Length: 544
Image 1 (cartoon, rainbow, N blue to C red):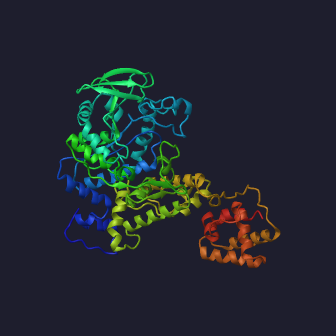
Image 2 (cartoon, rainbow, N blue to C red):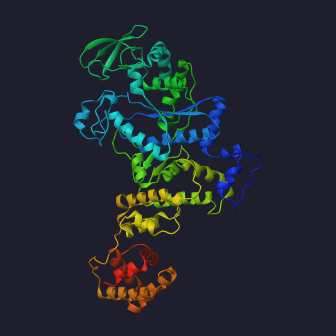
Image 3 (cartoon, rainbow, N blue to C red):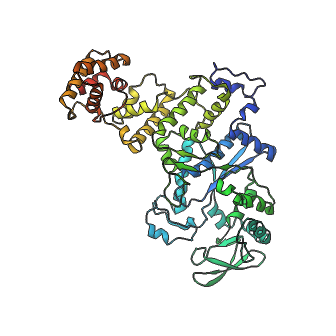
């Protein structure tokens, strides 16, 4: 892949330039820079472990996905350097169910499970055996669509099987040191009554308990505060204990041998969980992984941090309804992780598709290449692909034009594709996916004035004034003489029709749009009629 003296040229497509890149030049993308940092700081290893994870307390939203794909991009960069990489994704499904999200059915029933582990909460959507699993499945079923295949670790199963009994004992032995570390960043210091583990009651499954004593080995005595009842459990044989987050996270870094794990800016803030964890991890005999901070994502038109517990979220599945997998990956591959950005469902969708198409055209040499940005664009395009980089570009149809074609054909994707010239077999799947996304966007998210429905021969004629009818008849006569191909000639005929009918151009445009789509405005008229086709245009205009 690498050579010693690359030479870039504006005349070469990026896919050719890619065969001439040195290792140093490859390291222009943040994923490559991070991969190099991991190798440099962790040394040459037989296996690098990259980690991510989330508590499935509600719908796993697109903000959570930012961490997943950030890890995936770094994993790809490491593998392209010949490294053996393990990508683990932890479901923290033994965390406490603290709040009922607004988007979940049977709110009152779910409220009765508050303070219990989320893996013990029923799935009121009837998708899975429990609440946590339902939220996990939503992600596990969607990630392969964007080319992400982590190894899933289910922390409820691990804790309930007492897998971490030794680690919990070790944390209890280091209780004083952990308190000292945490108190460096607390305004209200912890005292000796605090313990690094939490206990779920054997009687209620809730965490409303108080630890009374530890025998120095594996036995914990606690009080159920709801029942005012005491109990003693053995961490090796019972499923009721787990480490608190700021102890659990560094423990798992050591247990799994994690070399890289990013985190949100809330965790990376001064005194946040990463600050404390990188000190607590040393008590378990390890060191903090390489990390970086990623910023929050908002939805266009709604600011602030997305929250699973609120229920007001946009999931990866929602994004894939509007963006093809490659474009969805492009949103993240083309943005530095520490940059906040919005996922748009408004007219910005058109611009995002255009940006991706331009990146692809430059990759395949269909547009001029800015030498300073060539390698960066090449890398962004490569990392945006679901699997292997395709051998040919996508069928290059502008998203706006595709939306018009779909509306002209009533959403019939087969009809739209049948009317396109030069679609290659290897472009067909990507084209169909883009068509589905475009139709979803039109019908669910596009502005009302963007949508239209083309009249048919059987449609009731629009209510036009006499002047408007004269204008439409004049245009119909001009279209009769048009060759059906020359858009410039058709535009000239449009204006000639207005003059012939003795009306202002604006009157003719309004009349024709009303006749064609029942609106007073629409797409650029000559181009629109050419897209509709001479025959269909005439069949509508002749009704007047």
